[in-house]
Image 1 (cartoon, one colour):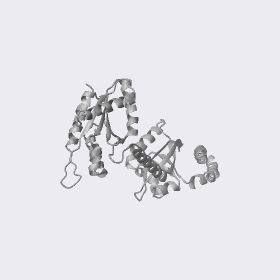
Image 2 (cartoon, one colour; image 1 turned 135 degrees about the horizontal axis):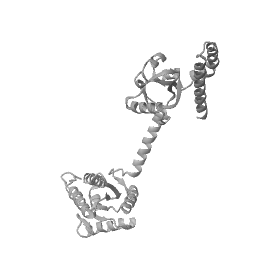
Image 3 (cartoon, helix red, strand yellow; image 1 turned 90 degrees about the horizontal axis):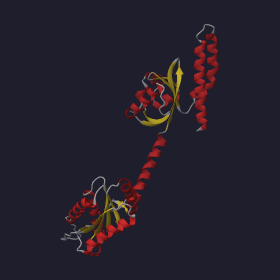
Image 4 (cartoon, helix red, strand yellow; image 1 turned 180 degrees about the vertical axis):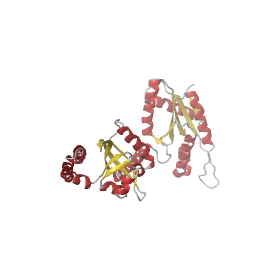
Length: 336
């Protein structure tokens, strides 16, 4: 990267110096010969930098590429003559044009938008390439222009996107329960900690539901774990249907589920808990021919108390859920 940067800087200095010298010499009759000599003298020094560079190099002025090297034409797929004849915006992907134009115009006005950024270009054959632009303001034949270096970063972009997608998949796998597609207990405690901190900071209510399937062991013993998994899956689906976008549900462990309801009082959350209980009770399971089975759930509901210990909060809700089971199951139990 250091060598590449030095090469760019040398080319910038050489081009700018060359144009300035020639412009000054050409102002007088006697200077024309010296201008030609200066051009010949400088041409060889920057030719290797410019003509054989492995990245596109061009000067942009008045919406066109007024000076470009072979790699620029090759990257776009047109000849140098065709490339120079078209507005440079035609080579940029439609979704990126506004951004590129805005930054170019701002730079020409003397602002300082990012000098290095990426966008997409469209090759003559229709293929889209990701490129990285490194640009600098300069003077070209007495008018403001930009000297630009473009590198093809398509492979790097594809690699970065694949890595990001892989990281996202790994993250999802690490916080999502495979069976129910709800968040798992590890993510529950992470999110609960954040919600408790928010509740303490802003004084907003926070309520927790803890759900447990009634007599689930007997169901598994009678019909098998495959049918039991269907019960867990369907409960997860029912819970998600009954929640708001701001709420979140988790498979806490085994047949236990938790639900976080931010900015909601315990009294209001009883309504949500009752909806979950009644909707799940309507679900029909058919573990065998001619068998229609209903499964119920007991739910504990409690609102967070300011500065309460997180584990104490969860334990309090857990005890309410067990109180519901003790009082007959298939019910919502909350603090009075």
